[in-house]
Image (cartoon, rainbow, N blue to C red):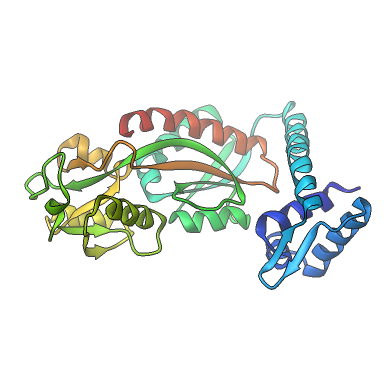
Length: 299
């Protein structure tokens, strides 16, 4: 049996529908249906339940997915390793980074890649985490680095590190004292991520748990504008420490802890259904090396 039939089945299972799998693969839905039917005939059992919201796996489908996924991953790695043994990593790699990460580590990454892998050309794209997720999923970029804020993933995710979420302002802003109580937040103007963002959901859950009423004076996702608002003294901001670590080190911003456990993970994302090339592997290894000291500093 061709491995692409198994790969198609896994993509249907992980994307939740025949049409979504066809869109990701760039093929007609009829081809996806045909591959699934061939696999069901080979197994002698139905693998999918069809319903109005898409598809879900039968018990036989669940068992097949659990068995096939590690085997296909091992096969893809073996093929990539065999192809890489006799050549130096080379070629383009399209890498999407969150705005916080690209400012913190983008230039260091490019310098490290140029020194270690001069034949690999890394092309950087900056974007919001939910867009990066879609770009990787739909093969618009090879690798993504994004904030993991509760995304139900159809990608392969590897944690690079975690940074605390803090309340930040310029030094003369009337921040509540360390060890604040809920009433200290009353009327405090805040910049918050826009509703619907993963970090905003985490912030709202945290505030509800603390019994804090947040005053969203600004709802903005752009980190540069957020820094302008902080620097102008218009509001404090609840942000990942990664996004403002330079300003904290320079003393232009100050922070208040929101709790040691209130953190956002930064993850590296690749597609399950596409092999990792030698150039991608070199980029991933460099990302790990560059990010390790950064997260020690901001964690």
